[in-house]
Amino acid sequence: MDKKTFYVTTPIYYVNDKPHIGHSYTTIAADVLARYKRMYGYDVCFLTGTDEHGQKIEKAARENKEKPIELADRTVKVFKHLWKVCHISNTDFIRTSEERHTRQVESICKQLFDNGDIYLGEYEGWYCVPCESFWTDMQLISGNCPECHRSVEKLREKNYFFRLSKFQKVLLQYFEEHPDFIKPESRRNELYNRLVKGLDDISVSRAAVEWGIPVPMDLSHTIYVWVDALFNYITALEYTSDSETFKKYWPANVQIIGKEILWFHGVIWPAMLLSLGIEIPYQVFAHGWWTLEGQKISKSLGNAIDPILITDRYGVDEYRYFLLREVPFGLDGNFSTTALANRINNDLANDLGNLLHRALTMIEKYCNGTVPDAKSGAVEDLELKEKSETLNEEVELSMKNLQFSRALEAIWEYIRFVNKCVEVSKPWILAKNPDTKDNLDAVLYNLIEAIRIISLFIFPFMPNKAIEIQRQLGLKEDDTFTHSSLAWGGMKAGTEIHKGIPLFPKGENL
Image (cartoon, rainbow, N blue to C red; front, side, top):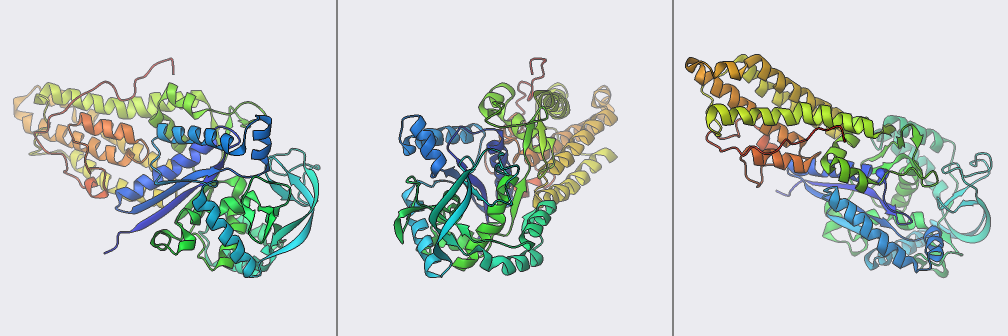
């Protein structure tokens, strides 16, 4: 039987500047989903990468007195380093400057032209260089770009156009028949209402930009950077070679993006796929933006959050936890170091770290450092098992809907219940009476088993901490992080524990 497959993508990130919190948020979310699916036995293809062409890169390189590819090479190293730091488990990293991508995009462009969906015309309108986006008079806000609110340039040039208007009716029908195609629902409704108003054909080439992929029908033009970038999701799978990889993983299960690029991914992208006769992705999920202390984060304001600096100070798994716990995925969130420190001190240190340290200390004190055998048990012990099974269902539903914060809420509800069970069963009292030794052993075994189960649930979110928990429990690093390992009773009696330093050290310096 063929292994189940799952294809998740992030946008490919522009190389005009170093990565910030938004880049890490999207990529960590995709990583959590990828790790979770692997636990369930899926063969996961997880793609991220960099978008390297266009006028903005040309301009930035010129100002820095270097070639565009040199600028791209430098920035790519920064992105790859960050993904390593953040424990990102991507299976591929694509660059739009790579031969495997440019070769296929040229072929795709020719195919769209041969289909009659690309034609030569004249464009006159407004262009935003920072966003690399075209706008009509009606779309401008106070004469400026509706996305970044900066000034726009009036352009008049011959360009190649894509017949986007041709696909309005079929896209409307697709939206109606596939309500889960765009998530969250509020963004789906916004996009649908915009789609109802009609579609104009869009420019897909630039005559004045050299740094890009040549239009195969006319080498004096380069392919518009957004069109070039969108096709990375299939060029990474070697679409044009009719490869087994493409057949295996396409259509993408989830494409995670920021809400500012939803129009490109929710309308232009599926229209081009329809022209090519390729299936549309199952889902595009557009998450919200982060603000800093209530203020929008932007390069121009100089308040961008550097994930490297944050993770150096607060910890990588702590950062991953905070981003996905603090705000429901899909909504805007506010980042503050105070909120991050509170999550670390309360959720992580008090609830989880203290639970592990306390349990292992009692195993050392009352059981000579080895996991006891559970010969009897109290009502609370049975509840621990039953609630772990219920938790599995809650987490599975939340992850299916990309509600990462809800999944973590459910996990922490269980963690707090385990802490409560310790207070109710009072192992330190049971240890004073030889007649209650069997009951003490059962309490401590079930406590350790519950913590083992917790380590599995948190693994997609905090992989290093999950592995450290299992190390302290005396478990070996093998294939324990699988869905089947969630079955109660996996902790073997007689296992020697290895209590370490507190998992999440607390301190005012946070």
